Length: 438
Ligand SMILES: *[C@@H]1O[C@H](CO)[C@@H](O)[C@H](O)[C@H]1NC(C)=O
Ligand SMILES: *[C@@H]1O[C@H](CO)[C@@H](O)[C@H](O)[C@H]1NC(C)=O
Image (cartoon, rainbow, N blue to C red; front, side, top):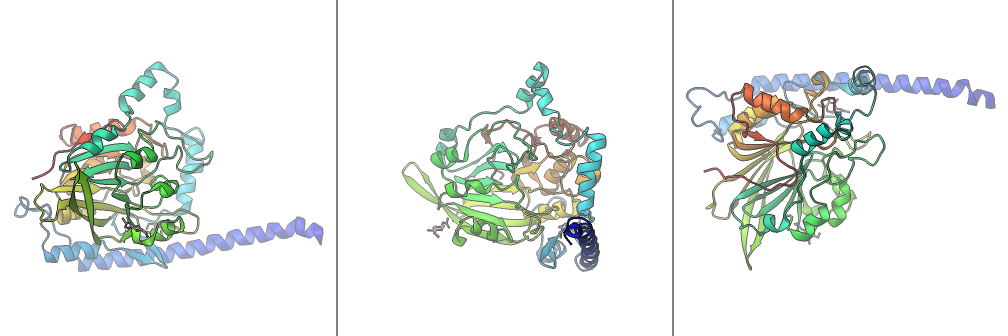
């Protein structure tokens, strides 16, 4: 009996379990793919997208009429299968866990000389030339909080803190995007380590400034660091993708402080901005927008919450200030139909923050992460006056070298005959003044 338990039986149980598990997944994926394919086909028939033509070219951005709005929203509204969200861009194909395992195990062993590839960063820290390249491409400046928060409550600034963590001020309203402040996305020897020190800590930020809004695109560990929660002031509002409040509430954020947005849903918040002993009221409009990605925090919650980009507008109550409009691009593959539609609905933007890293190998990652050519296309599609590249130079999680994103970005801009300042990479922590649109 004991021998049996210790020998044959567990093996049998184990192999049956694996087969049942694998089989169940294949059936699940097959049904999910059917659901997605049929839904997208029917949407394609029912909701034709507006096209940019010679007639509407001059009045393209932000000029969608009622019918076009209905079609765009219909085409790209959230889609669910058994309680989990799905992508709705035509480019998506099912990848499954096996494709990821092939990449991370087989592909990594053959093409990347094993696991733990760090984009060649640590090798560069060991040579004089490498260190010089790091200082040129990824300099770090401590954030000048007095300068940032002492500025008058008109105009806008952008400060990159690493990955997709950006500190954006528009007409005095402070927005922090996808907050991550740890050395690693997850505390584990398997998890990558930050290439460069952060230009400020979260405590510096809340001690010296006012944080009005924390905007979160999705729940992946490199976009949301829950350890900041105890230090977030009660006056800060969280704006997150649909389904994420469960996690935040578990970590102690009161429901009142959370606004959840599904794609195309809009929230209007009022923020009081203090300046020189007086205070003014600002109205902030935030719209959740689709992205081509996925979500997961644990093995069991895959896709239970949504992944998004956001359009944010800030003005005073009588809309008398110059137009301040931000596009915060979450993690996403490039989809011309989607981003052109966003431009038609909400463009133009005076400021866009767009991911430019984590894109190799393309056969696996092109669906979930755009490459710099895609990032430049996004900037054009949405009508961004000034864009900044983010989501690079922080953690190596893909197969390109750590310094490839800015080089590929320069190539993409040259290829499209655009000025090299059209999509910029900037030093960590350096405050960028961004001119507002008319
Ligand atoms: C999560 O969503 C992606 C995108 O639609 C899909 O390919 C994947 O199979 C989904 N995973 C699960 C477990 O539902
Ligand atoms: C956050 O919640 C607390 C208590 O639940 C409330 O007093 C505070 O006004 C809320 N803050 C925001 C910005 O909603």
